[in-house]
Image 1 (tube, rainbow, N blue to C red):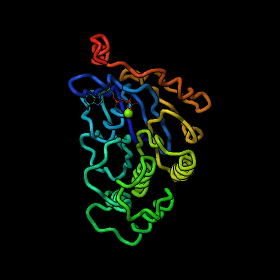
Image 2 (cartoon, rainbow, N blue to C red; image 1 turned 30 degrees about the horizontal axis):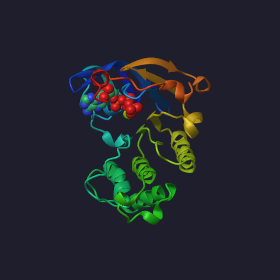
Image 3 (cartoon, helix red, strand yellow; image 1 turned 90 degrees about the horizontal axis):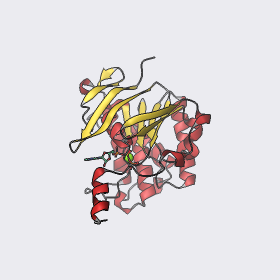
Image 4 (tube, helix red, strand yellow; image 1 turned 180 degrees about the horizontal axis):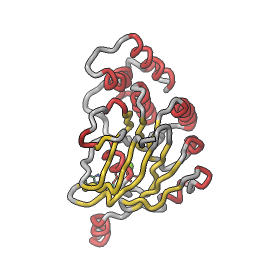
Length: 251
Ligand SMILES: Nc1ncnc2c1ncn2[C@@H]1O[C@H](COP(=O)(O)OP(=O)(O)OP(=O)(O)O)[C@@H](O)[C@H]1O
Ligand SMILES: [Mg+2]
């Protein structure tokens, strides 16, 4: 079967520095692939390249068999970005944010009854139905993260791409999300996710790709052989600028 996501020798630069130095991995239909690695190893950049947010400077990145530069079917992807601590500028309600995931699927057509029902289901699932009319700015960090996950799920994507989706989410909610993901995967959805701690998602993972310094350090094919999460990021990857600062005593 053709891979949903396929990276071959993919390179990317940020701020004039190489960040991805030749990445190879595939995600096939129905497969769950975890990206692991130290802070700064390139996990988010690999994910952001996959969703078209970081330009690929070399190699080949294909989505559903189409080179990323020609790919237009973005509604087939559900994306949960890495959580940022900065509050968004535009206040939107919980329902509006979750509905946005459905809008991507509908194009510019207004939401119908089935769409509204899907949004209600997602709100129920994340346990925030009673907060639907509240501004997302009034939510805690973990609640906000659950809203972003619900937004990705309502679009019923063929592949879910999630960057540390469980960061800051309490264990009870992690378990609910793991069960939800299990149902999506059973329905054929492929998943690419960045993780630091495998947690309740561990049994769902088919393969782990461990990045180091913008390269694939190793791939672990069998879930039972997955490395302990703490072994994957023993320390942050020092950037040259950080070293310089340490040496000059600024830090
Ligand atoms: N916008 C940017 N401009 C310049 N450099 C960047 C930018 N974003 C990331 N980088 C650099 O690219 C490298 C990889 O960053 P990336 O965010 O992909 O790491 P990560 O593996 O996701 O780390 P973490 O576990 O901390 O999320 C880091 O050295 C980072 O400083
Ligand atoms: Mg990251």
